[in-house]
Image 1 (cartoon, rainbow, N blue to C red):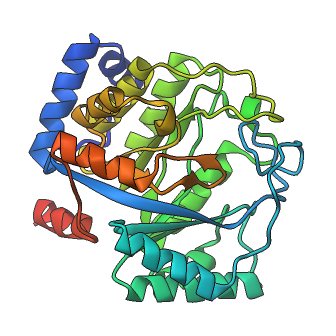
Image 2 (cartoon, helix red, strand yellow):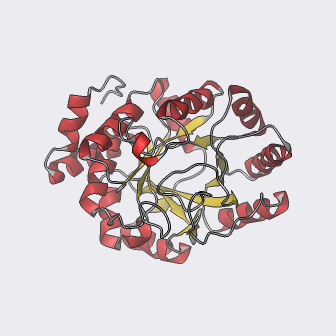
Length: 328
């Protein structure tokens, strides 16, 4: 099975629209060729700076434009973040992600503190990830030198639909930051959200953009919108499991080496629905009681699910080993 980066929109559309059971079977076959199907990467996401964001992302509770009841707090102390990382490691997480509600990274004392957090978490043997907004090449290089393993910067939706969801930045800004991260040698984590009012064509376009990047993302989060009161999308209905399966399975076929992450919206899914997503190629989850500002399944529930489905946590830094095998 070759790894392609020259997918056409027509090919992606054909995969996405194929009969659902055929699609899941094909994705499961690809998944088992490149990954241990029993392994699932367990990640913990911590909001290290919450609320007060100047952006107007229509889905987000942290924007200053909306009244959502989210309590604003400044950057957490370094020691508190390191303690949270230790707790995450003890509960089975191998990747620790830090999110800050910034539009872009600024070269100031807060960024210096984030650098220290990255160093400390890297020394614990955890894969450390950040999502801090837009990033210059120099800032990406500083993070890389501190030991950052991955940087999350989601496309959110298609280029055509992007302006309907966000007006405070452009789709091209997202691609530029992804390029800067890639140049610094940091793994790219980039996916999107479904349930924003987009069409199937928008979903197909977003997946096509991700799959045809010069370097495919190492991680692809697939998020189902969790509608939040006070945001413009508060009345959006929950997407169906069939929509999630189509996204996950198509992402797995297009980007065989990627960790496909079952992300936001997992709390609303039954165990059976989550099991289908794992069958379709999802091999990464967020654990812990909160996903930035929205609820997430508790870790003991996930442990029960892992036991029932015969799943096991994936060890840290395994992607580097598997890529070396493929490239050599």
